Image (cartoon, rainbow, N blue to C red; front, side):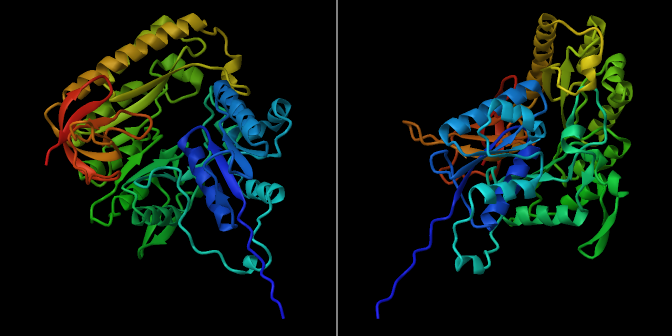
Length: 461
């Protein structure tokens, strides 16, 4: 009697284009992890994908334009496209520009995205393989193995005049503290050397749940930024050392003062990303932001007394409606006194649906450009002076990339100090490194030179 064999079909492949902030990148990782558990494989290019997901950004009009361009490119290269993310809230605009898209879902709507993929590219495992439980595979990461984003909440309770994030992602919704810590522990066990804590408002973590306490390692821990920071400081890598823990988007609420001693003790990376946005009280009032710039200067001084190596990065908006030359000069003077380590600046850009669009006295584009150039010049000068002061010091550096030997056999590498978050801050460029050096290694580096944004040096060992 002849027997017949049935071959198992290859799994359907999904491609992903992820735009926007690290919070969106985490969403992309979660979507792909779920799809892989459902039997899908991942494709690194358009050609190999049965379907392409485009995770969009919708915060600024320029970001929306970039998202529409990415959708158009995916359609041109592949043809089968599902759209998700922040701009997914504007499905009509997406379909008007690209009627070929198969489905549109909004920000962090994981179930809807997965359902759309199932509908338009059904899993191809077959009736027999479907009966086999999927293995407990590690989560998919879109970042290098040695650093990971840890998202602790969704949404935001603020009503800043220039922002539509609450409309896109809703009000603050904090994750359970034990779930966050379990994810952090799992990431570190899998090789993460640097955790980047992200949200829309890290300082407000747990406000929506009344800082609900959960049991963790035999003790109760609250859903509160200070408890979270303290517990993350207890994690250890497989070498027995604390991972770098970086706090992003920290509003300067009073309880932030409590995490500075943890930085001084080496349990947290001495780094705070604080979205000041401006300093002039009149502008902050129109932005609907807290106007306590004088008190912030006092607190910065106090933080530096407790932890002299603390690095503060921030971003500022220039050209907000009604911003006068006096307001802008105030901001420049405040920056001189604040001496922030890392600064990004943005020209004000109207966003559809933002309250700021209705404010009087818009700033002319030429004035925005001139002010942008001036703030970047001022902050670059401050940064250069701060980096020059590090020449001669020995600093821990996490390695991101190791180069190939040059004609003399010398090997270079690119890394970051504790003052540098990936993608947004500077780098440390190393010469004469060991051939055994690998991404994720943390080495002591003697700083030999500096420019406005980067350091240069060699391993001290």
